Every structure is written in structure tokens, then in C-alpha cells.
Image (cartoon, rainbow, N blue to C red; front, side, top):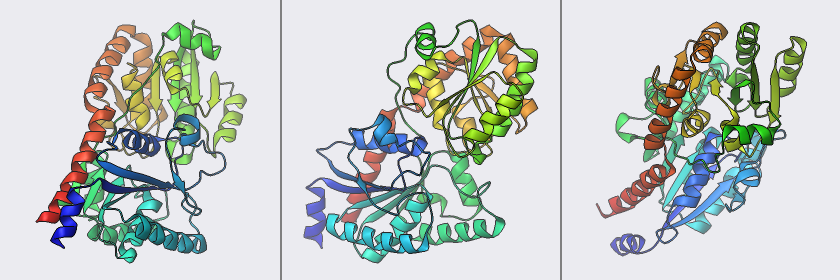
Length: 390
């Protein structure tokens, strides 16, 4: 055994990374940063993922074609007892063939099936799971939520490290007795923006009129993100401000419904759909708005900060760790009126808007860079493997 442990320390550390799907969104951005950033001389790093659902944009195809991934049927968003049963055995086979030192799962479904496969494979990997958010509110019925909590409690017992993207997400998990505090690590998201251009240049490329002020929503158009709340806020704001327009960058199951509502009440909204040029959209924007009921650590707000844009957001998840209320943006209650009041505050005070954006850039660059994310994970994996000596 001692010789086997020494061999691990004298070769590249094998990391098996499992995520349900690489749809455009926060988890895919983080995983992509790790796949690109971890040292190839220190780590043998393989990514396992499923396929995106119809109507979802594939992050690898759209923004990260350089990343190699092994795609497995069944490892997507949809839950299917039969497909998930066969997927479990596929993952067990992959684990036995790759023989990873660390199995790191991301997102709920991958976390459940990946960790069960690790246990049933009998291969002595260290297990890490990242909570990019959680499914404890706003997703399922009370009964299903209780079942989800029970499963997470059981799997936490068999997981070496539980990673949370923010303190609030961790605290909410601990309230449900999912894992012990000593097992948690806080690794905030880390990313980089490239190709930011001047506002006028971005507006011209998108065919937008520079005389308007643009308020932007970036993300999935699905219930948990509350696009209906965004539309109600937009109706309130536009009734008092005729020189503004709203941009919606994203797609999802509620997109067509939102288009119909916006058309029926004649809202000045431009639906851009899924976009790979997020830097261009941010360069064209004046304010970024988030209206969700639940979040982990929303990537769109980090991206807004790195682009020097002030944000208005509901007070959910770890938003307060990204947006410093009154310093880099404004945080509100979960009502359209509260959001509209905050937006109007920024619309009438351009100096405040500029100052918040400048402060947001400094804050997010210092705390949410991709280099820090990679270093956090690299150190964790080395620590886990070095513990084999003990």
C-alpha cells in the first residue's frame, strides 16, 4: 500500500470530472475554466458530461470547442429510472478503466449518480462534490424536496469534500444537515472576460440605437429565474422612462411565452436568444438586472462586474457576496416594484451608476478571477492526495 501511495505522489494526479450537461450557464463556465487552467504536467484531467436538452445552448459548441469531453447517454438533465440505471453502470466502467485519484462531481444529478458509481466501483478515489446552487427551494414539491435532502445527506457522508460557491449556499445546506461544516470549502466562481469593446462599438454591432439606455437580463428563461418578474419590472420602469430599452439574452422553456406577453403590453424589449458574444452584450449594456427566486453564485453578475456594469438584483443565494449593496450595485426584495425602484434610482443618477460600475469592476476582479479558481482546486486535489501518506 505504501508503495502505491508513493506512486501517486510521483505521477500526475488523475481527476475525473462529472457534470450532467455543459449547457450555457455558471457550472459550465467554471468547469471550462478548470479544464483549461489545471496544469497538464500535474494533472491527468478528464471531463464526462451528458447532452444538452432541446432548446438549450451547448457551452462547449458555442464557446469552448477546445475542451475535450467524453459524452455519456443519460447524463443529462432528464431523470429516467431506466436510463439512469444503465448510466450508473457506464460510469462504474469508466471509473474502473480510468482509475481516478479524485472524482469531482458538479450539479445535482451528476452528483448523485457520479458519487453512487464511485462507491459501487470500489475504486479508492477521493470524492468531491460542488454545489453550484441547490434544489432545496423553488424546484420541487415538498415531498420530492424531502427526498432530495435525504439523498444529499446520505451522499455527504461518503464525500471527502463538499464545495460551495458561496457562504449562503453552504449555510442553507448546513441548515438541512447536509454534511458537516468541516467538510465544506468555499470556492467562489472564477472567470475572465475577453474582447470587451467600447459601448458605441458594441451597440453598432448589435444594431442598437445609442440614444437609449439598456437594461439587460442574462440567463435561462425558466421559472426559477422569474422572467415574469422581469417583465413586470420592465412595465413599471418603461411607464416612466421613454428613453430605455430592455435586452434579454438567453433562451429556455418560457421564452416564447415571454415574447407574447412583451408584445401584448408593448414593452420595449429586444430578445437576443442564446449568445456566445456575452462580452459584446455587456459592453452595450448600462445596467444588468437579475430577478431570480433562487441562485447559487450567479455568473451573470460576476460578468457584469468584470465589465464594469452596476447591477440590480433580488436578494437570493450568494448575491450579497458578489454585489455589495450600495457600493457595487443595488439588492432588493423579491417584488417587481422593489426592482423597479432600484432601477429608477440608477436611471436618474448617472454619477451613481458610473461609480457603482467602477467599484464592481475592482471587487469582482479581485475576488472572482479564474486564476484563483484554478489555484483553489489544484491545492485541494494535492491536499487530498498528500493525505494518503497519513
